[in-house]
Image (cartoon, rainbow over all chains, first blue to last red; front, side, top):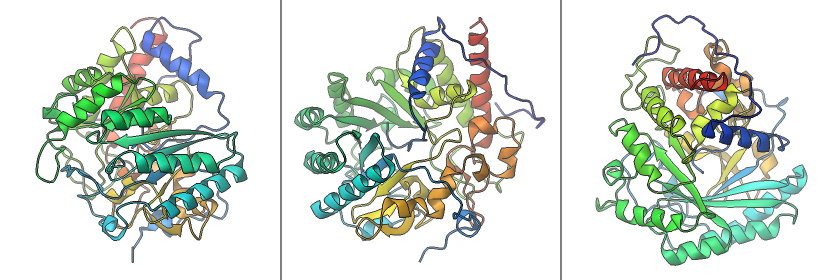
Length: 50
Length: 399
């Protein structure tokens, strides 16, 4: 597959963060985001470490 | 003498930079490895500086490094840091050096600073006894594997050409019996391997988390599957890595339960939901990691070595300099600028705030440096738009 031929600036959708979900993977993501809110600053971690 | 590119070395004024303290310390235990992986950016790449450094970190250097880390923790009142024991192969001579280094850091930092220690290993030296000792010391273990089959790891061989896979697989299976110690698997993408076969075979090794890493490449040395070109945002452009990752994403998203965390996908989803990223592969969060080499040199992250010889060097070391001095280095500062550190094409891009320009090292072009889109630009957009589509459908009630 290739990226779209026209490079029109199609914006990404605005996706509201749900309070809860039945989707198990999304649920895990939301739980991690909730835990992350406790951090004073979110830093990017070096990728060659788990 | 290293000739650094214009960005950031000649063009970034660090005087006004508001630095984010280091939270992650990558400590080289050994500077050599028992494997000879064909794609290794450290030992097969442009930078041969490892030859000039000690094969192993002496105790005095460990203690000095621990002292400097403690100094940084106190100065910035950090309540938690991560220590990544790395190499080369950090378990090359067994677990003792890893245990010693971790102990030195834990003893040096204030009592209210939690130290999360992880050793990232190829697994070949992770014996049952070594694992028991690491687990007892509260050190987590991450594995580097390119899939859960021997064929996926054909490039991971020792100097005699013998496959690392049998020993690495044994290590993975040992780790499944120590879930508190098992940190996860880092897998470098190989387009020659079927993505679903790689993903499902990794699940059989029971990792709590997996990350799929784009091979280190740049505009001068593009990755397999992408044709050389000058830096820029090109459309249309083939997206083999994006397609590979999309296949894994769909399998992961549609699994019906969380089989394992996949960091890249979770960080993209987090960004799409308005949260900051915790990974250097995407997003605009400041990179707060620093490396200490076997000779005590304070370096930028190793992946920079894939760009040009000397790219990671700062000229600083733990004997003469503090980590605060390293924060002022232009290479370090450039990775904490957020949107200000992006090329114009990225700042204008509709997926720029999620992509964040991708991994910094993938933006490199000789001469001009790192102020370009990623060589994986189109692949990243492919993946991000796909995740956005699936996430949006899920959030709004259909899968």
